[in-house]
Length: 55
Image (cartoon, rainbow, N blue to C red; front, top):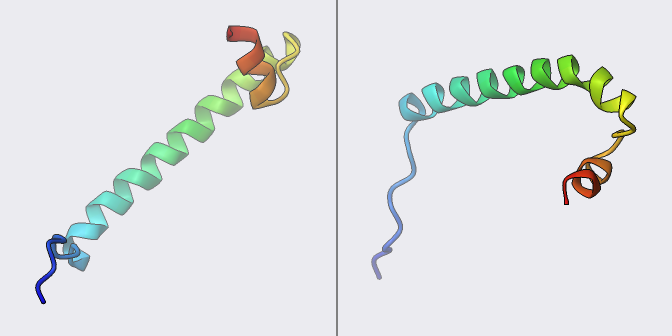
């Protein structure tokens, strides 16, 4: 029986993706730290607070 699934990526294909993901997460964390004081000043302390504020 053959599988229709694509072959899993090899390690050399995983490394650039992992590095890109780490950089994106680090950038998100820096941005979040930068805007957190402004959000807190407006009463947005949780994701739900933000959701309620924009909906």
